[in-house]
Image (cartoon, rainbow, N blue to C red; front, side):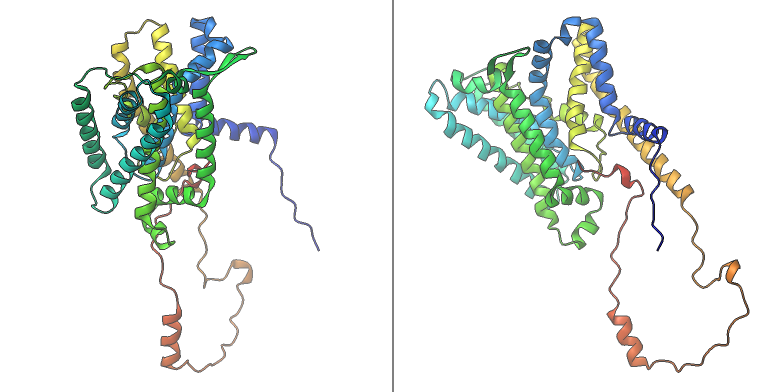
Length: 396
């Protein structure tokens, strides 16, 4: 009996593989984030202090949480443009229903979570049952929520929740060494990210990715596509609700506090290498995309670039990131097609075995009834459009 040994990769091969990962769509965001943080530190050395850096993480936390929710919608093959309006509505709800009564904090928080889940459920059912494109359905929900919020507030800042509720966004664990304070926003972000990673590894999370990759195959595998897709919108609205709770702490109660968050989340997800159209992406990279985006804006601020260029930079990032991801995917598909070996015909013998044909044995053909029974017993082929770039498929 001969033992089968597997060749171990050399150090050079491992280094080359790591380099390929860094330049891949899902790995480039981490390299970009490191470069941006180093550039910010060179312009402002105080940014590298632990207390200042933890404040930066606190500021990015709501954006990263919204990006995590948007990730599940996009990797499932859809869009959610209502997230910014959900954030605004939740901030206004907290500011006007809680007031200065601390006892109302928990009931109002439960109502906010239920309201967020309801908005996501409505978005999902409109998309799945009424067959309305998600871009149109969530755009309509965005305008409806924004209009209702403006009608309620009159377009001005109204309401001021109790200090105990605002501590969720601006408070933290104080008296710690080195960092001085660990904001609750950072704790919430870590918990949300860990839950998202765990959920993405579960069968239901993998079904979301499979649905974005190939809905037909997901349906033949027994998945309820309408419920899987609806759940992504529920997750998205709940993440916007959590971000709204954090923003109440330091952003104040204003009907414009969540404006643009939906496009910021989409930009962060795309920057994290998630493929528009679904089926490809990593939730950790999507959260890293939010940090890279905010780091870029911080760098532009330190460099003296006017804030009016922010939207232009954000639009350019979307175009460049999508074009880079598409180019990389096409290159990998082409490379795998060139490397694929050509299989010999099943009936053609190899050169080493070409000998004089053996005399054929005469066998009587099977009856027609047996042939029909054998043909009917064969399972019908399942349609599939499996992509060639499996190494970029989603997951954590």
